[in-house]
Image (cartoon, rainbow, N blue to C red; front, side):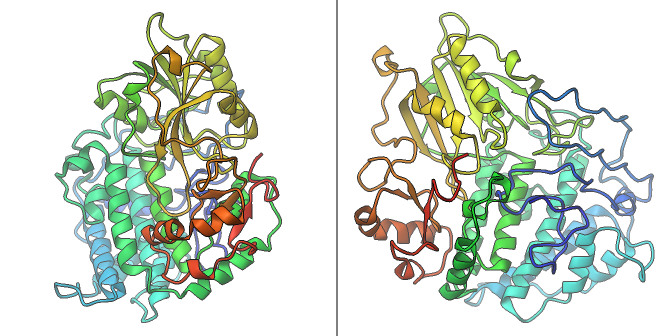
Length: 527
């Protein structure tokens, strides 16, 4: 499921970075170095100085892995003294101009302002980064972008070009973040990078409160708004049905990372676009954000195990909550994290494995936070068991049940607890994550508030009973049988509209269609 840095996409037509296309950005592989071949590009971006060395490769880590390999730290210049013909700020400006041009072309109705013209300087600038024009490009993304320029007339091809340009921006931005000093990512570092942050680059107001306090939420709002503008009329419902039938014909995979049944089936060009805009915000920031559930109602102190960049931990800190953030491999300039690379963290994240989870503070309500726990090992289950054995009362789970996070063993642990509250995370298109708060049996009687709107593990949205069937296009919707499926058509139609699926698709979906309904147990969705 993991493609090499110089590999090709699902059809072999589009080179991709070394990221899995099947899990919504869940895994950043260490099989190959995702920055190979960028030395010349970043030397130009730094104004002709010495190129920054690419990060060392890092294999998949487990709870019992040894210490990660260290690499020498070097002082690097970022975004200073950009050369006139190849500076990074200028390059990003050209990419932004291309993006504006493509979005205006893809919009079904005439824009309120004249469309941005095509930037003829971009292909010349791309070629200036190559050692020799006739040789293989320094990186497959440069090659992909050059092959797709100038913008084609075919709308699906234009969307593929937009995805390639956005992938290039995110790749460069992610690399530059890895050069920042620790924990500077939450400050105003535009003077360090001389480039816009993702919320600003993709059209948001740079000084908006949301972009500063929750950039992941700001990016989600921008992406959904743009998707609703350009996607619904791009491909007909029949192309989605074909993609779903192709997926339904695949056997279930024992490897959760490569199981296509965890994905919403989309036409290839739409899948590429959606993948870029789900995967990269995960690598740069974190995996989830939500509205409507205040974790401070359930605990006073939190232990965030598997904190990654510390994005969620920092959100809790901003809410004046006490948080201890731990990760097996905290991302830093000297350590590659398999999900986030070496970006600067949002807050202090200590190195720690399951045995390092601290005991709850006496007299304090303490909660363990598991945000997108690993699906290929039982570290999340082991963390929950240790925390409860130490006297912990509350576990906050952020992720999917029977999906791309956690394991069957973790689900057993949570199913033995009592649901205290929950809400849906923001939907990007393929994910069905929720934030749910679990307490020991009897915790409600101990004073915790009860959220009557929260559902349990894979509960039918129609009747509230246990459900084992998931809608393939709106994966958050679970059913127990045909009656609840038929009764949920209006809600299903609205959920599909909210993530820019085309009108008329839901009407084609029937209960007996394997391409429309996933049997969670048969499809191997529970490990």
